[in-house]
Image (tube, rainbow, N blue to C red; front, side, top):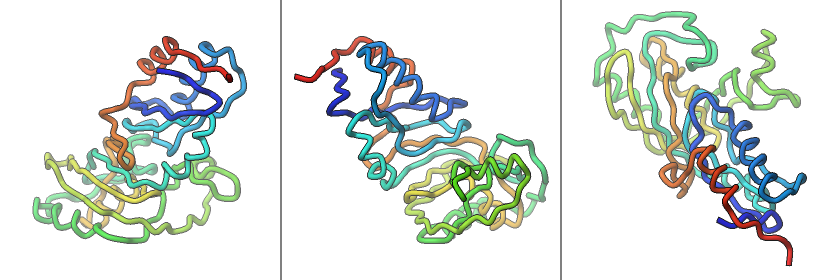
Length: 235
């Protein structure tokens, strides 16, 4: 590997469960500084992954940071699971269950038909516990302060929604979707459409456009590769 701060490059990272996207960038930034001795350079990720999600994170260096929006605009593929019969404030496992719902009426056919009902363009309300900004402030900041805020509806597109396994109360899925789609919101809406409740119990980003997590390295492994790399200085 050759590290070229001037021309820039991108890295494919397999973000571990519980890591924040910021922690990944910080880890790589530290390794690049150790290799190059440079203290000031541009580096950032192209699309936040929640701490309770794992999978592909694209990190851009130097001039490639100008391509971040292009990466973010690409379609995404996720796999994961919903837990049926309960809800949480954050729509995932960050918070404890706050309500429970009946599930006796839920059949395999109902689950499969409900998944099909999500296909195509639709309006989606982002989770209040999210990094989306309103008035210059992250939504999760309002939520932690118990402040209500009007959340704008977003238009998203679900291209594929496959149920890969059913082991109630867990339902496993694979979703291909457009930019800006919140899988946690799909979990909430999935429970609603089942006349029950649901929250996201696991999530992994498999791909961003043509870029796949199978080609990515963990932050630790990538940091080691960076430290062993050649540093290209200006000619």
